[in-house]
Length: 258
View (cartoon, rainbow, N blue to C red):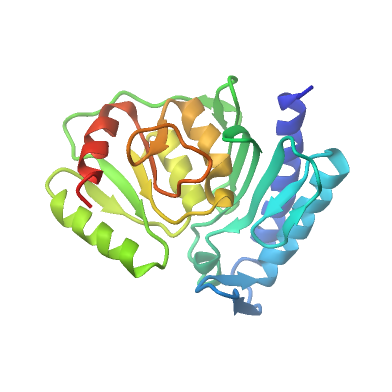
């Protein structure tokens, strides 16, 4: 039987260990390389943080682990830890303080537990299904929607040129209705949406470890998490739409044309 409270504590312990490593190594010169078959970077800090997380999860849980850096370990068909030890590696490598640790517990298509830590700004966002979302111990809920300003949304398209072209068209078509931006880290973008600082997130091409933790955090904060058609995530689709409820339907309609 699942004990999400215990699982959340385990995820927090692991994420904090990784966050300490990342903070310690920030602004220090270190080796980096381009991942095979990708344009993304991996640094020694990614790997060190990954080892710390995997060690703690393995010692405190029997669930298998899927990591961006070390792949899959374990053989269970039940819940699975999905981790990105350093989301926003390109930012980290350039000393841009926008990156985070992301640990989610998934069961099929459901995100049960999520922890995202921003080590530079000392923010810990976490949630478990049905128990609300929190930042540094304080419950978070979307603030009232301010209709007096233009909504702000993140666009996240990865490296694929076709995806970039689609989002160029979307930005041009919605310039008078939405302000758009990109931080280069899905984890941090999703906690900004959960907090209400930004109104939505649209992506294509992200991997499960990019959003496994953010899925339950945004939902528990009051956001809507679907695919571009407004349907519940099917466990495979990389076209994601995460918004506050007031703008979700409008964005679903606009996404039909890109």
